[in-house]
Structures are given as C-alpha cells and as structure tokens.
Amino acid sequence: MNRPHDDELHALVDGRVDAARAAELEAWLQAHPEQAARVTGWKHDAEALRAAWAGIEAVPPDVAALQRARHRLGRRRRARLGMAAACVLALGLGGTLGWQLREVQLVHERPPMADAVAAYRLFAADAAPLEFDGGGRAALQGWLRTHFGAAGEVPDLRSQGFDLRGGRLLSTPEGAAAMLVYQDAGGARIGLYLRPRNARIGQGERRDGRLLAQYWSEGTASFALVGPATQANMRRLAPLLRGAG
Amino acid sequence: MDACDEERLTELLPRLRRFARSLAGDAAGADDLVQATLERALRHWRSRRADDALQPWLFAILYRQFVDDSRRAARWQRVLALFAPQQEAQAPSAERVHDGRAQLAAFARLPAEQRALLLLVAVEGFSYREAADTLGLPLGTVMSRLSRARDRLRALGEGQGGATPALRILK
Image (cartoon, rainbow over all chains, first blue to last red; front, top):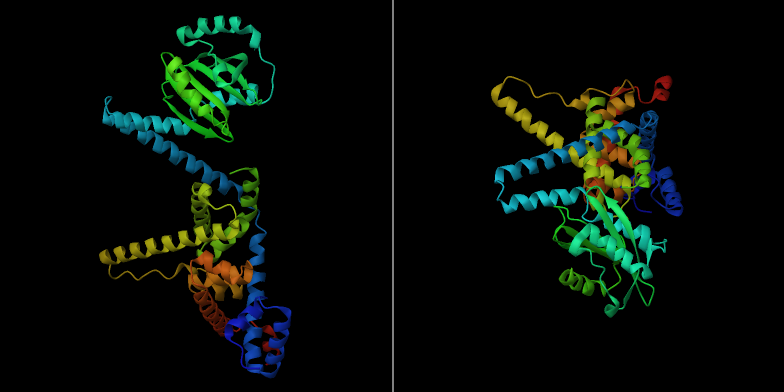
C-alpha cells in the first residue's frame, strides 16, 4: 500500500472512513511508526479538546439570551415603526407616499380583515349554527339595514350558484358586524363579511392559510368575501358584489 | 417560528455558546456574540430553508458575525494607530486564556479560523462538508486548514511540556 494522503489520516482520526479502510490504514500505520506517532498525537489532541470543552456544555442553556434577542428585535421593529410615523409627519398631510407608507406599516401590524377571516373560520368553515337561517332573510335584512343603512343589503347570489344559508351578527371595536354564509350545490361555503369602515382597509385580497379574503370598502362599510382559496368562482363574485353594494 | 423550533433552538444554545467561547477571547465577548447571532437568526428565521439543518445554519451565522466583528475591531485598531502611533496593537484577545487547562491554553493560541474548524470537527462532530459550509470554505481548504491546525496544536502542546505526563514519568 502506498503512503495514504494526510486527508485520509485526518478522516481516520475523525472517524470519517469506513471500517474496512480504517483497518487498512491502521495496518499501514503499524509499519510506519513515525506516521503512527503523528496520528496518535492528533487523536490525543482531539480527545483532550473534547474533554476540555465538555465542561462548558454543562452550563445550563441561557434561555434569557433568546428572550433578550427577541425583546431587542421587537424594540428595533417598534423604533422603525416610530421612524415611519415620523416620516409620515415630515412628508406632510398631503403626501400620498407617506400615507401609503403608514398604511403598509399598519397592515404589517395586523393583516386587513383578520376579523373577517376569523369569523369565517368560526361560523362558515364548519357548520356552526347560524342565528338566521335561509328563511329568516327578512329579519336579517332588517337588522343589517339598521346598522349599515343602504350598504346593508343581503345580496342574492343564486344566479352565481350560491344559496344564502344564514347569517350571524358579530361585533368589532368599531361597531356591529355581520357574516352572511352562502353555500353552493357542491357544499362549498363562502362568507360575506360586513363591518364598519376602517381607515386601513382599502381594496385588495390576501391569502390566509387555505383561505382567500377579498376586501373592499364602500360608503361607511367595509366588506370581505372569504372562502377556500380553491373556490375559483369567488374571484368572479367579488367584482359583482362591489358593483351592487 | 413555532414552539418546536423554539425548543430546538434552546437545545442548541449551550453548543452555540461553546462555539462562541472558542472564538471570542473571553466570556463577555462570547455572550455578545451569541446575542448578536440570535438576533440575526430570529430576523432571518423565515428565509431559512426548512430542510437545512439548524445547527450548521446557526453556527454559520455566528462565525460570520465573529469575522465581521473582528474586521471592525481591526479597522478600529488602525484608526487608533493613526492617533496614537506609539500604542502597540493589542495582543490577540485569545491570549487571555479561557482557563488554566493546558489544552485550552494551547488551543487559544491558534488563529481563530483554525480554532473554529477544530471545534466544529473534533468537538461538535461536524462532517468536513458541514464544516466547509458553516465556515464558507471550499472542502479542499478545510482539509489543508485542518492539517495545519493539528500540526500547530501539536507543536504548541509539546512546547508546553505538560500535555503528555506519561513521558515525564519515563524521563
């Protein structure tokens, strides 16, 4: 056997050669005491290093370090938010750029229409009992009008294949809200969510897990159409509703 | 980041700290290094590819942080030297040895990049590939550096005389 490369001798020390090759290398080393002494020295040093550093592992994990890191990160993020707010002021009230920045920051804080998605999960995703069933349409309509005025129309989506299953009244910090639940022939449920308008809700859509929320505002109300993102016809519905609302 | 990630991260903290101790000269420096690493890790948590092993990823962040810090410190030293030319460059912080153990003393006298590699390979049990990725080196460089590091450590250990008590008895 030729003299093995040093790389292989290191691999032997680190246990990175297979057993058969290790045996060959050991045999070669027996015949070459000078090289054997080098390898033994490396092994000795590696073991000594492991022993010397083993004690340090016994130090209990510094969980506080993790909390500190998180805390500082949060503080820096808040500082950035504060800076963004200062930018908004500096840009002046008319600055659309500043306004958009603020909106982006706020949206970052809490996704738009999170309440709509939550309401869908609660009442539409699984067949939770609804306060108004399909037959109580008139009562539901009356209640919505009281709270949302002209915007409080219960849309008829039968032409799109969705029947009204019922509705549920909810509340938000800004006032009353409602979730109307529709279902198509295949059993897929979508929810139309109405709530008092909120400055941060423009028009748009976002994915939340498997759900898609399309949202817009009209007059004093904000709307969100929430349903499984796989419901392709939902994208057709939202523009229709926007036009009608 | 979920509870499971958090648990794995917490588990790795002692090792992360050990790696930091092997690089930084003193405990305070090591703690700062771990702190900076955790902040960077949390900031980039989402950009981490899920199938990447957590330990090499964290160690790579820590090593980059250490290298960055060292460069900054070196620049600062040069700036200081402009104003106070008579001031000697500070002795490498590693000379402030971790503790009395001879092995650690010899280890501390190795250059930082050799210390990092030896710790990963010999103590943490990283494969050569993992060590190469963590330190941002080609595999060939890892092997030649490992060879130099071991020869150097050997020479330092023997120079101190205390490393092999068995020989002393024979003398």
